[in-house]
Length: 364
Ligand SMILES: O=c1[nH]cnc2c1ncn2[C@H]1C[C@H](O)[C@@H](CO)O1
Ligand SMILES: [Zn+2]
Image (spheres, rainbow, N blue to C red):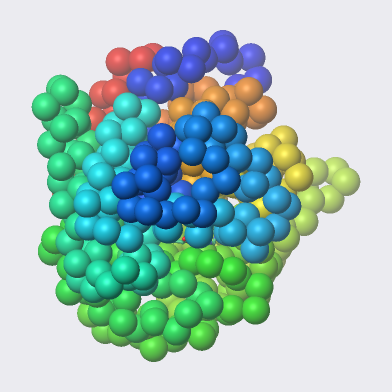
């Protein structure tokens, strides 16, 4: 770890090409958009309509120390995302915000089943979000930028619609849906409740990740990989519980941790979110330091930009400040993420060779 590395200005980190695999659409709205959509759609549940106060409120409420209370504020973002117009707007703005943050490839996820309260069909939800991503990508290109966005469809663990959502992901895979995920409360909702969905996805050669090893420990990670067949782990941070370090610094990997590392299973690490949900006490104590040193396939992600008040740039800045990571480390996280994306191999290689490597070389 390059402790003596020079201080990297935030603008350098912003310009560095970044790849984001774990970002929730309903966790990344602009506060002003939440307020305006509430007004337009007649949603009256917000604590305030002032954008600055609203942004601060979301962050405070998410600093909750538990995943279950962290998830409570999504009722408000989902509350204002119940029309096609709202979904198009939120999706288009997400792409603009990610591009402004220096993200060159993103997989943005959401649960279609949360946007049907006012009568939209699941298909209409997916089509509206895809239209928004297309519009956002067009606006970025019109401003001289470039970004590619893929979609992951989530099923909520506490509902019983995973097979239906898996089918939706397969049906829309040629329209921009790159994969599937399960999200929501982890404790009490093991991933094996959705085995039929994972079986269906595997039969259809479709990709999926699973939120696991955030609010629940090793059994959740083990089930996600060995029973369900997850290709990546959403968070996966509690794999550190299977790693022991002796007083003399010798490290021992348990069988599950060794398997995750040997198979290069990507960890979608979201440092700030993990502090907010109480998964870890602080960024300084975050196992990303150990996992990176041990060369797990670590990726860095935002999770929920609104609730965490973060961006990819700010997550990189926090890691730079806390662990002394420099551009070589950020390039490594970025290439790890690009290799782990759910788009085709040729496209991943092209982004690595034509965008990421030259982008870091230009900063060096
Ligand atoms: O970190 C998370 N863990 C589990 N579920 C989450 C996390 N962040 C967001 N979600 C939930 C809330 C959203 O409504 C849902 C789909 O984006 O996923
Ligand atoms: Zn998440």
